[in-house]
Length: 378
Image 1 (cartoon, one colour):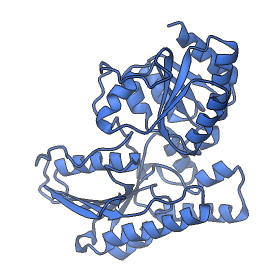
Image 2 (cartoon, one colour; image 1 turned 90 degrees about the vertical axis):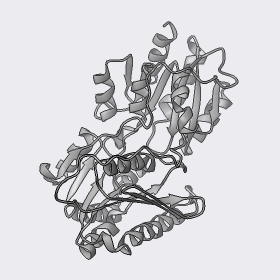
Image 3 (cartoon, rainbow, N blue to C red; image 1 turned 180 degrees about the vertical axis):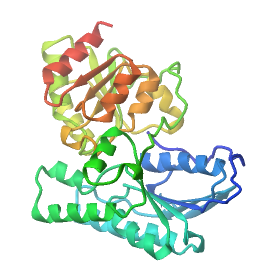
Image 4 (tube, one colour; image 1 turned 45 degrees about the horizontal axis):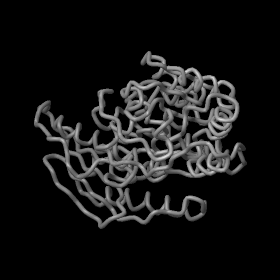
């Protein structure tokens, strides 16, 4: 899904304190309208901070021309950046490091950043290594909103812990212990920090929410060509290295080869694994439709078009990565199939929601097919 446009929620002047709080410098990667869930949620949170009377400076990236927008208590600064080649590790690493320097330099050069609260996320990766020096240079309070854990995500993807990565991981924990406050997305991330030696009082669970109002009664968007006479299994958002592919691919192929074959897959998605999955299904004549992420205003209608939602996560990424699409999927009221481990907070939230929900352990192709068959007769 594409992100919020430039229109902002109205900012009120309520909840003021007699003692003014320091300004917040919120640093992320891609800001709306560019695609990026972290920037989308950061914009919403920045608006909420400003509505409570805080002065907020939101800094992120754009593919377009650089810009600065000023609202009541909220400034949005966009730095122009080129997209990187995701398949080239060296170029991606250089892009990440240079971009982190640019983003935090934009904080450093602001006189009001001295003694301020600096809030940063896991996007771009490795910003922690630059944020810690900035904390001491500016005498700032440092809040780390965990979105993804690095280098743990790299270790999980490669499936091995080289001596260099092991050293980098130890150094990362050394730096994490110098962060003043952690905001985590769920219990799984909290447990990971606790195991790493972060004290309980420095961790708060602050979940995201659906980026737009969703009632579950929206008019469904038209189904894409090729799926109009079938039930739709919808995957929406990024489908990257952390998301399970093999069980989905083999399960859908078996669903059409040896079962009722009523479901087709709608990939409203970007990402390397979306390309792999689309190619696999197309070669085996399994109904699949691929579309680019919709604008945020069209997102509720997209969710309403699903007969079931698909969320996936590789087991080794539990706690390290959290698929934020779960909030909107739950609000849509449609059944959810989660191919991922029970240790993830996705399973916790879906279970608490008490909707029609199927949890499938990665690798359990038969379990995935069974879930599709049960939904086929509804």
